[in-house]
Picture 1 (cartoon, rainbow, N blue to C red):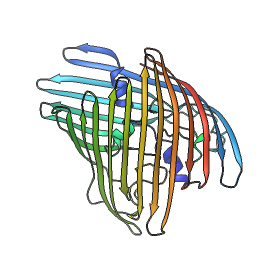
Picture 2 (cartoon, rainbow, N blue to C red; picture 1 turned 90 degrees about the horizontal axis):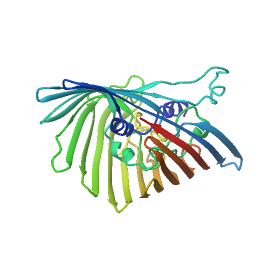
Picture 3 (tube, one colour; picture 1 turned 30 degrees about the horizontal axis):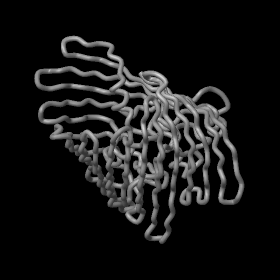
Length: 372
């Protein structure tokens, strides 16, 4: 559990890579060579009430960042004949400090700089190849489509008093596609259809385990004017002294947009992937199974976007014949104050019958997101 929570401190949404590049500030553009920077800073005032299974309750107020950490990213591209060469480096930083005492420190500040993207990409008419560290493909579009991406989300598993991000809908509808060292090929777009397949550094099942083949992940996605749909997955084998795991996962989803309305339904199913707090970097026995769904609706009118979100994941241990659910329901409003400034308000209710069985979290968050 301690390992899981430490890992959870590094978890966040994946989509800022594309979000940031769209808002990037161009610093240099000459002779087919460009260099740009992008950034995001967000802060929320939050209040969370936790009702434990034993009947006790706690009320915690914080000033901290939300589902996304604060990010600074740098992008380079150069056209060389028919080939385009690109790189991206992004650095993800926490602003949260009040958790220092709990983690054995009594002074100073906690930056927790984390490098989640450091890759090169070569592309042409034949498609592209990404080389380096980037987010995984399994459940990538599931988290990309989360309407709470620039918001806050749930704080189960003790995260209401944690030192890093909140969890959005991680563990309550999808697993988090951890950044992985990878070699990934993506096809050129054909009438909106794009496919990606990559080999990735495999995760360890336990100390001393053997992984004689890389982890393989894929995604096929269609993007149209009003409808987008996707399917993604992963597979990996790991043999260890105590655990032999044949890990597999499948994610899927569809989004429909019309007249300011957006409807998204997504889900996933997996065996031997991740842990009970929704982080896919762990390998578990095949008897550990997960299934989840996330249903969301939003309406955008002028500068305002209204969101309602409901997600749930079911965790099963077929050996012990145990089963439990983790769920989250959120209503939120996002108001674009000006270009690069978004105000956010959320109310969230979440329940955990697996990790801290019987815990219920109810809370609200009010904050702002600043981007360039």
